Image 1 (cartoon, rainbow, N blue to C red):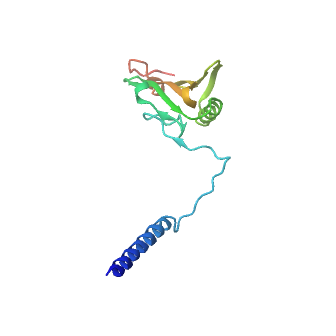
Image 2 (image 1 turned 60 degrees about the vertical axis):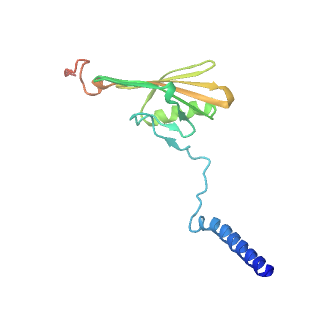
Image 3 (image 1 turned 90 degrees about the vertical axis):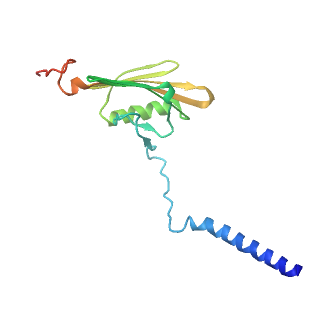
Length: 163
């Protein structure tokens, strides 16, 4: 009787081991892995709120508790704070290139312990501060203003402005 129970036990263990090992292979059948190209740009994430012409590396994480926005009839903007494990210089280069690609004009740059960049569009302003943080992190603070009246050719009182 002990032999029958031992044989059943071994049989069940072999079946479970086979199922376990083959289920790992089932996830890879039919899938091809895309080789990464080191020269490609890093993936970008969306931007907080609905401002689509400022893109960030996916390594940057938005910190809600250090961010705020404002929306009025004639103005919107805010302060957005991000942190991530990126180098200050590479983040500066990425942001400068991404802003240029989205038709922002670099109008100012200052470097000391931190890096400050200023960009403009006809009705938008974006200033950013890139700083080293403890534990190998880097912070990015964006100060964005959008004058909705300038985009619509209205004065701050909502009246049409002739050009």
